[in-house]
Image (cartoon, rainbow, N blue to C red; front, side, top):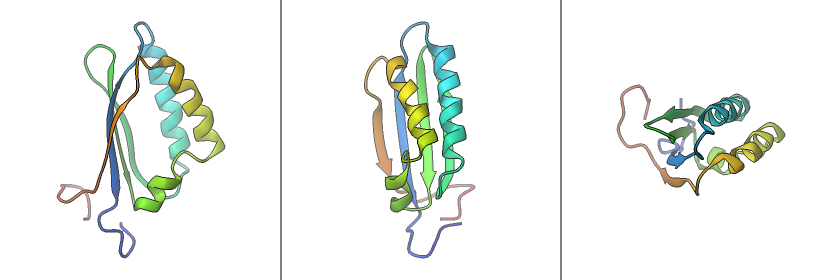
Length: 107
């Protein structure tokens, strides 16, 4: 799954809260972002998850750091991301990591 020298890829984990009454709109925007990410090279996993209330979680796994750096450059992704900003209640809390052990990933 990983190209030679990728060292297990690159992952991003984040959480964010949407504005009150905007969760339905946020889910539609997130679906558009997933669709846009589907055509980006190096995307292995790209998923959003709803927690309690207006809290959402995001997890992305890319084949390597280059794919992570190139993420979001397509017109489709930029259009989807522009609809995201007005719906969030504050800045997302994001962490970029490197997978070291997992079930379901060929590390």
